[in-house]
Structures are given as C-alpha cells and as structure tokens.
View (cartoon, rainbow, N blue to C red):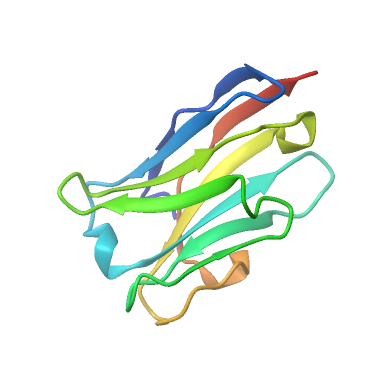
Length: 125
C-alpha cells in the first residue's frame, strides 16, 4: 500500500549526484526499517540500501557501496539516499519501502509493507 512519497529524482550526467527523499505523513519513519530500491523494466526490484529501526544499522548492495549513503532526519521525518558518481547503470525508478515488523536491515523488497510510487532517475552518458 502506498504510504510513502519519494522525490529528488531527475536527469543527471554520468558522474553527477542526486539526493532522494522519502517522506510520509502517516507514521514516524524512525520507528520503521527503511529500504531504497531500484527497478528497471524487465527486471526485479533491486535492493540498494537499508536502515534498521533498532540501531540505525545500514547495509548497501555491492553495486552502490561507496557511492550511495542512506541517512535520516527525525525532525523532518525524512529518509535520504545520497547518490554520488552516478552512471547510466543507475538509471531506474527508485522506491523507498518501510516496515515495522523486523529489527534488522534487509535489501529484500518482499519484506517491506509500505511503499511509495517512485521517483525516476535517469543518468545520461
């Protein structure tokens, strides 16, 4: 079910940066595990990064490790994904997911209950 809202996507050149935001007015994000995912046509939704609700543990897919950073601002009830050194392979529809039932941090999209509608990121060569 759609409970989140992503923003910050756009068109950027190779090597550029974007910062995505995930917000909601429905609940307190800090009490939920948050994941960022990317989907391209014909492929499964790929887990990129996650932030646990219990101890702020983070995890990253190998494809983005060292380039993407997940963070949160509890005052703004927002979770961010800072994306640097973008390549055309990073092009896709980016989603954030939230779940309150597990304490860890997972990149498995099937474990998240709440989603946004996505924000498009396009990286030109």
